Figure 1 (cartoon, rainbow, N blue to C red):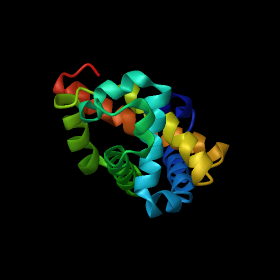
Figure 2 (cartoon, rainbow, N blue to C red; figure 1 turned 60 degrees about the vertical axis):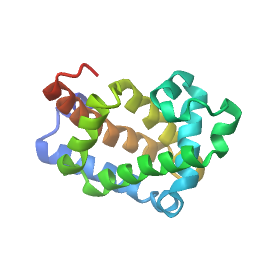
Figure 3 (cartoon, one colour; figure 1 turned 45 degrees about the horizontal axis):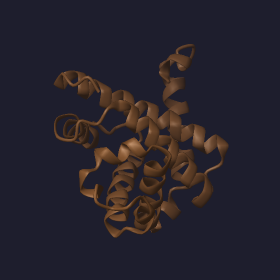
Length: 164
C-alpha cells in the first residue's frame, strides 16, 4: 500500500492516510451503534464466502452453516472484532499499544495468517457499504487503512518468528 505512495513526501502520505481514517470514521457510527448485528454479519459473511476460515474459530465448529448468521456467540465475537477495529481507527495510525498485543495473540495463540486479515477487510468493506453507507471511495480508504494495520501486524509477526 505504501509503495504506491512513495512518490509523495512523508507529510503528504500522512495527510492522505489521515484523510482515509476520517473517511471511514465518518461512516463508523452505525457500526458502533450496533456492534453485535454488524459483527454477526461480518463473521457469518466471512464464513460463507471463505468457508475455510471457520476452522480458525474452533468454538464455532459445532454450529451448522445455516445457523451461523443468527448465532449469538458468532455475533458477540464479531462485535469484539469490530470494537477492536474501532479502537484502531480512532487511534489514526498511533496504534502500537493496541495492535502489538492483538498481533501477538493472533501469532502465538490463534496462528492467524496475514491473508485472513485481508479477507475480513474485504468483508467489512462490503458490510459497511451495505449497512453503514461507506461508498466506493470509503471502502478504498478502509483498504488503505487496513493495509497499514496489516503491515504493522506483519512486523510483529516477524519479530515473533511467525511466518503468517
